[in-house]
Image 1: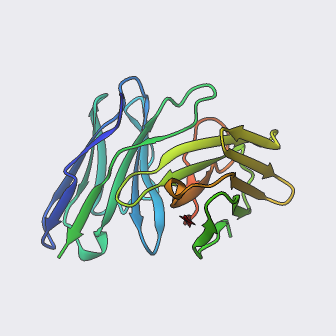
Image 2: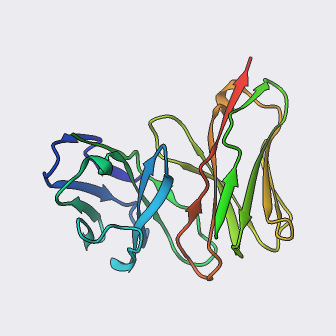
Length: 115
Length: 114
């Protein structure tokens, strides 16, 4: 069955290193979201795209985070340079974004640890 | 300020009973509200959506109510089972119309004991 995939599932890196997380949305979905989840802050929206165009990235620290959709089957989230406070689980989600379909389908997440 | 509040304490109930989870919000006018289930180590899974003009929505053993006057949604699981144990998140559209981002509550952890 169709599902959102994310790679890597786990990433441990040292402070200052670049981190790239990848997401393959469900085929046919035109809206892709990036979230971050921590115990303290819960699930926070970082950025989202519709038809590959960025719609809102107000939740993302602009100086170190960047999100792109090079094509309809790939979304990326980069952190450069990474910091210990970036340690969290990063989720990608996708949806249809049309008509009455508002639900989002989440991937399994990338657990990032920055030491 | 805008807030979504869910019971931060875990809800412990006996198998077979009805679990009721609460989601309260302030300073939003959502066109719809959604409930998701999240199991440890996994992403949230969509359960139900209820619109501002709907009072109640049902799906199998699940029931959601939406009171825009009280600014509250209740999520009920009837005949609860240990397999229902998970964290349940409410999420709302900030109310600007169209297909928008969701704002999530912190979630309530439900534990159903045999």
